[in-house]
Length: 272
Ligand SMILES: C[S@@+](CC[C@H](N)C(=O)[O-])C[C@H]1O[C@@H](n2cnc3c(N)ncnc32)[C@H](O)[C@@H]1O
Image (tube, rainbow, N blue to C red; front, side, top):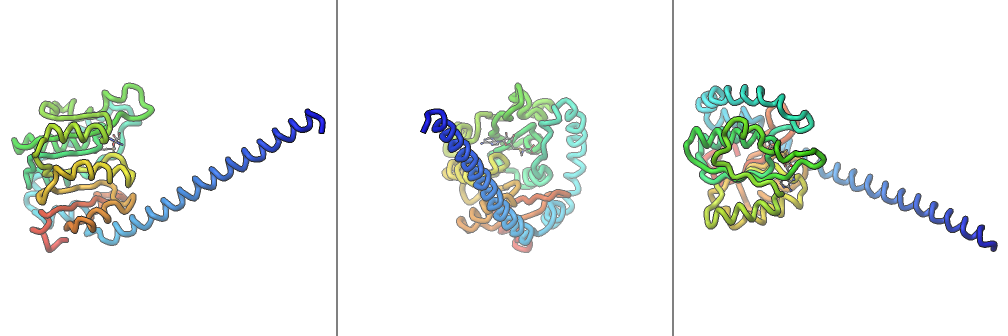
């Protein structure tokens, strides 16, 4: 076979196989995506089935009068946040956690040590810090990671609490949960976490890693609030494995679910 012809055949073969590799990759990714969608559909179906209603419905059951009072208490904060938001690039104005739930929990149950993962511009952190300030009690430790693909994004992590001047006693680390959490735990020493709010890495593995990291700093009095539990079966596995009492609620006017777990729910047997 002349040399040139063999070269052409080799190139054609490579191209043919490249196409195959591309094809296999595409099919592989599509299958992975479909599988994850099936799981998400199932986990979302479960969350929907066990959900006891909206945040408002839950808080009205726990303490209707106090909830009404707190809604008044946060009106100024809501307005202040609305006024600050135009200073934040649109791309960073992502959805927030169930802030009213966090605020209510903090005001009513007065946790001392609060750890949250996932800060973003700081909706949840603002409500938590305001609750701590109103209680004159408690400490917030927060973990986040710079926004990928956004220049100078660090300056916007926790932007709202900083603008609101709520950040004086705030411990915020921004190197990722894997690095931040051990540093936070070192600061805590043997102190236990009273409220843990998870809203960072949405992968099952990420949640598992963080929960493993904090396990020595949790006890029977730790309350766990997980945002977006419909994404996978992590929350389901977590509460079943630990035999925790739990509640699932649907975030107000949103197609997402929040999981609450912990022994404090024993007081509310009527809703669990
Ligand atoms: C949904 S946002 C948090 C929203 C926030 N709780 C609020 O209410 O405004 C998720 C945040 O988690 C952060 N994140 C994602 N993976 C992370 C990781 N491995 N470690 C720490 N933070 C992470 C993202 O940078 C993002 O800021």
